[in-house]
Length: 446
Image 1 (tube, one colour):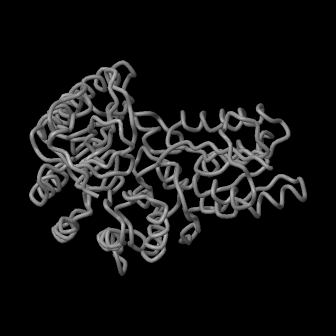
Image 2 (image 1 turned 135 degrees about the vertical axis):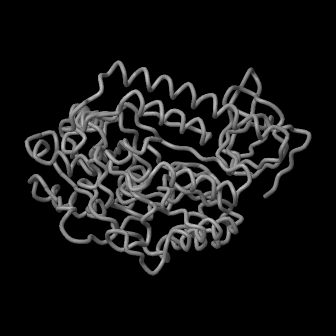
Image 3 (image 1 turned 180 degrees about the vertical axis):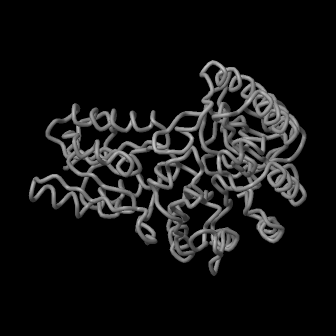
């Protein structure tokens, strides 16, 4: 039997696309094997969000060629778009498959096997408004939750980001197509669904922020209404989407998970402006206030970049104080990394690495403390987890899963509870990052 191996780099959108390409190969008669095994076809779904991601993409391409010199090596995704000229010179690659062309994987593979000529199928993602790529999942590597790609592209052009040049302009998947895929995945046993996109907040919009006939709130309601869906969760979103109407509508959806990953990047308005972010610190804070008005103890998580060009000590101190005031559940801190092809790469006043490292360590420590406090605040309250995996802690067997707010909890049991909903009181901290469900108060919900 023909063997195919796939490797994914990057975000949850990339992960979805990799699994969809895996399904295409399986449907064409390929046995899917781990990437470190010898295969007839290797697919590397590349990433280009940082220069390091470019490097890792090249590294995995060369690793595939070394593993089997006679294999067909296929490079797909974002690095294909941003590093095309380099890839054209790289003889380790047989097929170069750009974004919005991954659904052409099988025809391209057949053409190569017939003609043995290098295949190049890359379109200019910045020319015109592209259709939504026709990829579809019938199963996923996850056991309990499924990620649904519902949006692609970005019109924001943040000064540090190359992704709009790799993904193109915004486009959305039709609600009926997302619902159809959800129904199929429910039949496969999945109960929780995560809506993902490159710029998820623009779901349903026409180009440049013009509202379309439907929006993200309509999609949330439609997916939640599918029989068998227990939870609907959002990927990363921007604060501008949270109008009063939007928050009120989603707060009335019982299946919606109040876990909001709101991209911040900086709590300093001067830095936000230099980043070309489309909101102010005050607007972001108001969004958090509105979320907390409609949801009881919601989880708000975020990303922060430290050491952006021109970020003074005063700017950083302002951002740090802002983060402490907002009180996030989780804080993902990144040191600014120069990315060729972006405006930020050529900005003056680049920050020395040692300063970026100091600021990063400082914020990471603050983030860990806030996260600990958020988990401690739920102790004694009734929580519900979707059991995902069995693990051994201190010599005892627990089933761990996440609450709707994405707090990891554990339930002491030797039973097979995978994909079961369990409700009980949050008893105590089992580890620094896992809360223990009090067994005497627990019951299976569904």
